[in-house]
Length: 172
Ligand code: AMP
Image (tube, rainbow, N blue to C red; front, side):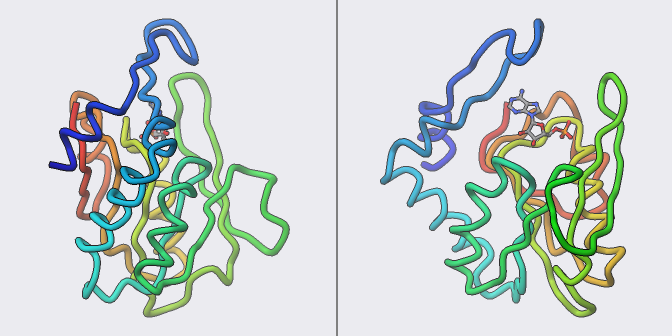
């Protein structure tokens, strides 16, 4: 079962990036070619036939899962990046962090009216990042089909912050 295999592989790194945070390190999943392939196939199966026209990956670990998934679905890939990285005309959205705010950006021509977009990131924590990504996509006239994550930290209730369907393979 995918969830059990992923739980085996995902590594807890205590006190990273700061004291009190248990960082869920997904790099062992990427290092295992068969597991990585199976995760992408598992997600592709879920979204096949859902008329996804674009997959929006959130920098940076959302890119790792989002790009192969977009290829598997025959959809375009949209990078949603931290402020200052995208070169062309863009829109931005800010969200609260524990201390201060963060801003993400998307190119204005990344999505268009009528697009059905799947948002993907490696992990759902408080939901602030994914919510900002959804705001950018909807602000350009496209629909968000679902937000997908490899890992969800259920106790942070991030899905309550998102006004769309949410799917995660692994729950803690
Ligand atoms: P949030 O906006 O609070 O849902 O945070 C989600 C973003 O922060 C994702 O891009 C995650 O990769 C990262 N993140 C937050 N908490 C963790 C954690 N405990 N382990 C790994 N990544 C995390």
